[in-house]
Length: 316
Image 1 (tube, helix red, strand yellow):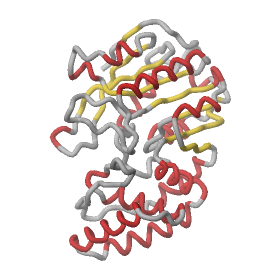
Image 2 (tube, rainbow, N blue to C red):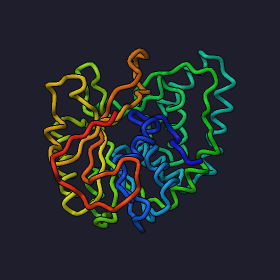
Image 3 (tube, helix red, strand yellow):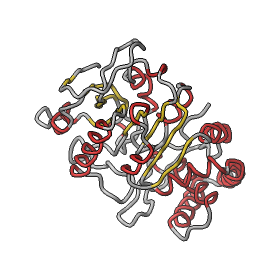
Image 4 (cartoon, one colour):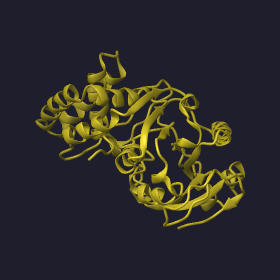
């Protein structure tokens, strides 16, 4: 079964069934759909949509992280050499005691941050570091270097051959882009396009400042630029959904997104936060789902055109 091959901050595995509820009414009856993810991340939503909705005939994914995109392309085109290399790393790593594992991890991190070799080796190191670093968190410093420390895991699965092969099969129908999210505009097909935006989340407070896994910041100005693009794609007739943090749930006076997306529909859904340095802060909270179309909860009925009404509905 196709599923994310890495752990990723903001991954949507825990939210898939709730997101499914808020898809456009009659989505499965829409033929030859183009599915686009401008911020693909770990790909939970991508693999779910392609596995579940057979009316999607074309898919485009994009991300700003070059290492992530290299990984997707390698799994798409070179799954067997990647599996072979990951198996070698796994066998070697598991032979060590914890002190030698830590030494091996930092040597691998230095190699990953050093001179580029080839796609297979780069992706193998990328996956190894993701499976063995602290809390499975991918993060880059201001110089674009991976800087997450070693994590202590008893027996991590580094080579998941079944997932890589399943993902590779599904990725054959996907066009993989690297760069700014706005380039997906070149691939839209009007009302036959569904775009799911999962950008770096706006921090809920000053202490939850991790909102970008690459060196480029995603601040409030970037959130506003994204809303402009969202509105532009809505005007083009595309069906749109966007996830982000529910800032007003933490601070009722912080209605940043309610104001920014006032021309669209805003829902609240329960989410489970799985990546946090403080284990006590991992748990359930609400997130926003913003969309430009009307929905019929629990039904898969009429096809509805994008709507620009000011509506806020709460579904928890």
